[in-house]
Image 1 (tube, one colour):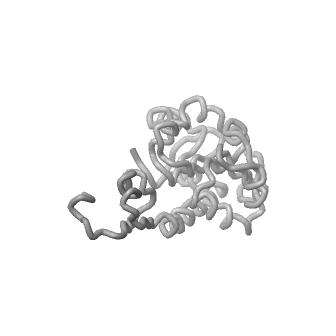
Image 2 (image 1 turned 90 degrees about the vertical axis):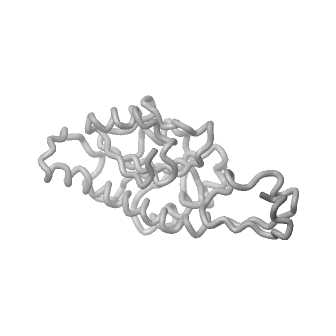
Amino acid sequence: FLARAPRLRMLAYAAGTVRDTVTDATFARGLLVTSGAAANAVPAAEYTVAAILWANKAAFTERERLRGVELPALPRRHPVGNWGKRIGLVGASYVGRLVIERLRPYRCTVVVADPYLTDEGAAALGVARVELDELLATSDVVSLHAPSLPETAGMIGAAELARMMDGATLVNTARAPLADHDALVAELRTCRITDVRDVTD
């Protein structure tokens, strides 16, 4: 492509990551590269926050009850609502950081699991950095914001889902392969947790 476009000076990618589009040859040519990642992060963060707020209001489980689905009575750590709830974000990405910002008006606690986030960086964001196992076991809502890489594929599998609290909600507005599809379907059939996503695999 680059050989056929000798006058090309800039690659403007309207979506998020340029990982699948830009190669070393792009940089060897000295091309300017832009991405729509920051702009695309805004509606994704809004969707995520809406899902978190609805989940903590038990909107998804109550919807199913109104449809006549028999669900187990699961204990809740706090009354229905967002007061005192713990939100766990897996990844401090563009979207993750915007979610943190948009959750500030609510009286909830936000924790983040991200191998590249330092304690100092977390403090600057106003959150606590925790390991993934702790995040899964202690969060009312777990929201995925990690990149889709070979090492993150299926990072939320059967063992990780089993660590989630009874009545917790998994939100995925990142990439579908982060959560193992078959393990998630099996866990959801128990009605122990709920799931909200705008990505499918």
